[in-house]
Image 1 (spheres, one colour):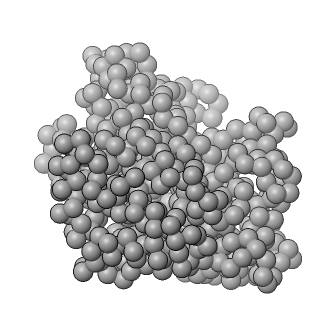
Image 2 (cartoon, one colour):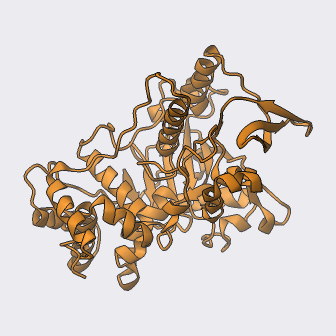
Image 3 (cartoon, one colour):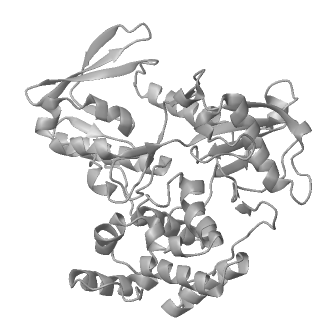
Amino acid sequence: MKLARQGGPDITVPGPRDLSSITPDDLRESLAAAVREAVDLPGSESSYWAGRMLVYLTSSEARRLGQWEKIPWTSFIGADSRSPEYRTLLSRLPTRSLVAAKADLASTRTIGGISEAFFNLTLGRGKDGEADRVLNGPTNEAWIDPWVRQLTDLGVRFAVPATVTGLGMRGGRIATVTVADQTGYETPMEADHFICALPAEKARRLWTPEILTIDPGLAAMDNLFVDWMNGIQFYLRRPATLCEGHIAFVDSPWALTALSQNQFWARSLGDHYGDGAVQDCLSVDISDWETPGMLYGKPAKQCNPDEVAREVWAQIGAHVNDTRMLLPDDDLHSWFIDPAIAWHPDPGLNTNDDPLLINTAGSWQDRPNPRTAIANLFLAGDYVRTNVDLATMEGANESARAAVNSLLDATGSNAERCDIHPLYQAPELEQLRGIDEQRYRDGLPNVFDIG
């Protein structure tokens, strides 16, 4: 992964190859050296950050859930009292740019956990494969269409397009789901069991007073926070040679990350799609829709589609064309913005039908389990409690497997259960995590948490 800087050299952060013989002091020193070598940080700040990461890596699950879950990431790493570079690289980048979270709101347990996962995967440790994996073709061809074909072959019937408008109760169970077609005509559908796989902000609209009487915990979903993280695709006349992987535009006001896709596809875009004029697709995530941009001085939410496209293109150019021309304007053929955004003549009224769940500090208690108190209602989605604990496809996938297992348990089925795995944790630190569990029970801080 490349960390592109505006007006400066791009960054590659090195890391230790093996933790098998490393001591806690070695780990702290290695982390600090990696950051100090890669970025222009005072040694005291890189050492402090490394110390905070050591605190998290050696924290027990009880402390992570009981203490770090309730503390924002900025507070945990002491970002407010440190340099702008520290805040940019170690507070904003791991949150706003990579997972569209706000550093002053995001749970330390979530950001610390995903940082630990990336750290381990970069070292080739754990069961999860490479740290960064992408599709080998357009999303529909590589993923969605084969999945739909397989489910259809298994007897699944898709009612698309349709809108779920309500759940009907009978005898303390869900009896029907009401579905509206494109004309608004509503049809109640009966079933024995229901898995609600709608996103949080849509699922919580279905909880009637009768449902909440049986499962009052579902009302806490109203506290869950969602924010905008949407994409734009730039179609290019020449292949982009920006990075052989993801690229984060560290200093971009809109917290941009991108991937030039054609290099990973099994079939060349220029040879198999369109008239051959487009040779590559630069797929960009816009994670910050609230900060004013560099061209128009407006946040993305206040822009029209053309302004968003021009602004994103300019922010990328400021990062990749600062030392030599890697992405000339002549390369741009066309662009396409996420259709989930509904554009209004008054840009202040733009809406987003597909926001992203943000794991704010303390939100774990507001997130439901896959099995509800209603005997035949199960939940799947990245907002459900999972080991992944982040709004990602991995989190959504794990929640679906947990929902299936819960349904099989509820029906007494002897069918094979879906595999669910905890995230990998370095065994070399297990003893320290055990010590920390006892210290947490005794009301003591982590042994490395020295202020």
